[in-house]
Image (cartoon, rainbow over all chains, first blue to last red; front, side, top):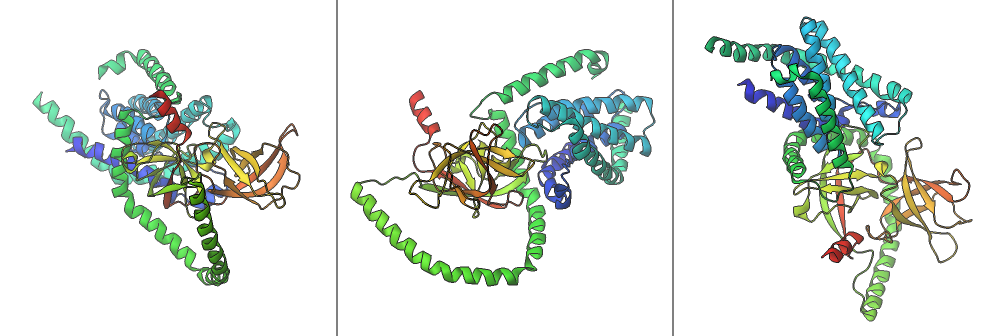
Length: 180
Length: 291
């Protein structure tokens, strides 16, 4: 069943991103903070950590697919989210091989991963002149608040999805092994 | 899948090439979305209309409750205004009749102020805050074309950036830059002529639009409303854009510029009207010439 559920959850999160801006309190906006909620990416981090095996790359595939969808639906420049999500998920997947997949490692990788995604987005958008924000402004007003808010959301996602993902992973990959 | 592992460097380089190619493809000056993009727009747009309906309903409910607190004061002010409007309404009716008669006399039926309104609802906003973009639930099938102006009851909020079959994305005024100018008029207190100028873009630090005048007007005052003039060939005449907050000169001191604060609230959008100009626009003329 996980083959159906996982894309559906990702699609739901993608659709929900359209309302995320309404959920951020207006006070942050007055402070000049730009907060971007990367909920699809946070789920993909969990996906890599607890669903994928060391030699499977399903999360990377979904990162490319849903990155492309975000580009097409919410921005008008293709490829930017696709590339940033793919590189960052690949990085998380690589780190997972070195570290144990537990709660602390997952939170740390989500924190660092969101920072990496957002920084790549900034670099590409700065190069294509979508934003003229300077590096120091970006770090203070966007990157740090975004990383903190996304970490909080990651903790909620962890509580919601971690067990399900481990269960689905076992169902899927253990069956394969036993049939082989 | 082992492909990724073995040829890591190769894959990353390939990814970079695809990235540059896609960015180049999308930054190109294109009028239409590719059919793949249109399909995703519509598919996700439908899902948004279903999933986000309860979310939007709740946020609106919260806003309404917040608004309740100053309902009484607002009501008093509105009642006063209403009494004054009766007089204006009568005058407008008279003028409209007179205008129709005069137009009939001249055999002139179309005007630059005419437009057909298309009602639409905002379904989603771009989570990427650098793109000032919202999605509305009407598309080409409802007669929406790129570059149409989008307004609310308070004033202009932006223009249609790209239209798919059933949804479209709207670029808000605070995302405007030099490539999408608006030709505007400002009423001068004395003199028959209006002051003419262009909206050049949005100043992020001041949160105001930048208006550049074509001439130097000495008697320009703050607080005057700014309207579209329709001379840019895309929008109809007479859409309210904002009010002048400050009149100054540009950084070289050569041209007169003004900062304009938009009259519509750009952060809290719900029901919008897409404006289909009655007269042919520049874009229509292009198509005719091509044919």
